[in-house]
Amino acid sequence: MDGVEVVSNPEEPAHPPVTYDMKELWRLSSEAANGFLVFGLISDVEVDSLGNVYLLDTLLMTIHVLSPAGEYLRSISQEGEGPGDLRSANDLFIDSEGNALVAEYAASRLSRFSPEAIPLGTWEPARVDSALVRPYGVRLVPGGLALECRSLRPRGDRATLRYFCGLFNQDGSLQKKLFERKIELDRAKGIEFREAEAERVWCWTTDDRGGVYLAPEYSEYRILCFDNRGVLQRIIERKHRRVQRTAEEIEEELAILTAEHQAFPNASCSVESYRRAVVNLLARDDGCLWVRTAEGWAPGESGIALIVDEFQADGIFERQVKLQGRIDAREDLIRIHGDLCFRMTSSLGSYVSALSAGTDSSEHRPAGGAPEVICYQLELVR
Image 1 (spheres, rainbow, N blue to C red):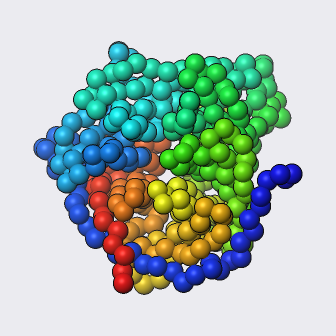
Image 2: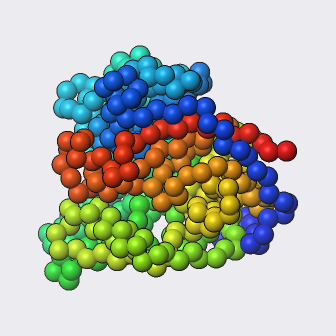
Image 3: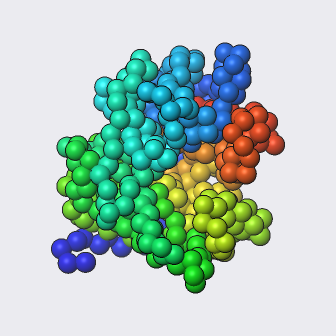
């Protein structure tokens, strides 16, 4: 692209890897925290400036707040239609004042709460391309918000489905689209959702300056780096190897994709035979970018739970970071904040159950037992 720096990295990093030990600090089990706290599906974890931990429960539509030591403090909001209630809970962001911002896809809005769980009102994005905008993800940036969204514009038997990430002004208007995936649907011809071509723009993050990083392509190791005005500054690429899925993974991913698109009657779905190249982005406070990949997701190296690629601010593939410990790569959800690593056990099982069951939380209990949230300190191994 004209005027955009493209940093093409080899498969191997510039320097040897570093290793961090995952030292357990605390764990919290569903129903064990205070005798009644139940986890439905913990889909996100955020940490405020005081070290308090916020767990977003997408299934039960609430936020559990824990102390830095993992002690239960309170819960924010619940499912409902009244003031301060949530109609869905898809993503969570904690601002510098400790206020919680929740993306509500079903309600096409964001809901805001104080650290004391007091409702502070809602915010709605304006229509884009004449269609209602439904937010999946949210981050605050200077002067506005960065959102990951979906819109659907029906026209008889046809419709235009858009997944996009963009910058929005405080008044709700769209400032700029950063990336869009547009799908034309025609019921008369049949609707097919192919995994690589019909996925959300879900792999993204922001840094503390409001820069946005996107990895929108399923098959490519390519990261788009925008400044806080939405100007594309750099593209980071890295040679990589495709990681094949097992037959069991293919079957399970197809069932998930089909359930996720059940709102489109008679639609057919297909999945790829290999895993997504980039699966998570994390902009670190030191200016580095940590990238989780299909290769590092389940490395197969004894004693190593995850391998993360580390890029410097200039886009150079500096090294790999190895996290020493044990996780279930398929089942567990991992979130890293600074030198803390959070592990949500049985996450995939909870999600699959939620797609196929009712709203009673007892019906969503995964076969592996009560879900747990485990917090680890990342300690550099010397």
